[in-house]
Length: 308
Ligand code: BGC
Image (cartoon, rainbow, N blue to C red):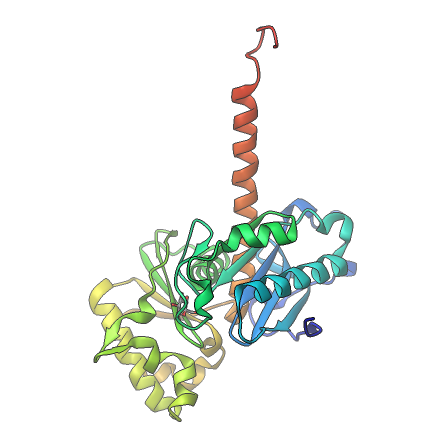
């Protein structure tokens, strides 16, 4: 049993300009350009159908509270339910073909989650992509949540057309980092765990630390600024993009940041995970289709050769 999903109000950025299926004239959007993005957060699992050509969320964004404890089996069940509802709300005939991409707050390699800093330890070594694919009977791609959100910003948001080294930070329960060089992702950087003054950076600089330590914006920003200086000193990026929950409230702390690296605020705010999830899903399906076609071509008799 899971909680009923709620329809959310959309906030800020291009992803906010959602359209309902009924608003679209036939032919405005091709079902093959649509994918479902899922963002697995500490308090909610959110998802939407996304037009991967434009990076726009189409239809409603749905959210189901994250099961507690957020063990893999229950998260898979909730994700499956969320996807079912999104498909139902769209059009089951088309929706049955939509691939699904999920951003998970863990380092992720080949669809397996490898760490569990802010989630249940059962995620370590969990074959997330395979298990979700089996549960949902559709193509599923799983990636680190910051990498996935960063991808949305690089393709359609604050990092669009940016060359050089771009570092996207998602500031929420933890700190996620995504590193892009000329638009290409270097996955799983996990720089929220950089050690500063003998402590994991995210313990002091994540948004959750503000509440936990009872800090005002200026005090919190001082710690976050120290963290940015450390990243600057080690990586000399061309641009920082600040995303995640804290990006919605950047007005409260931007003026306290003193790094010389330019700072942009994530265009998608905290919808980036959903949009990026849809992007990795779409790309996974494209790769699988290409591989199947190549295999079929390799196995097919050459032109003019007798079959059999
Ligand atoms: C995790 C990262 C994640 C980040 C943001 C960190 O604690 O280690 O994998 O990207 O939180 O959710």
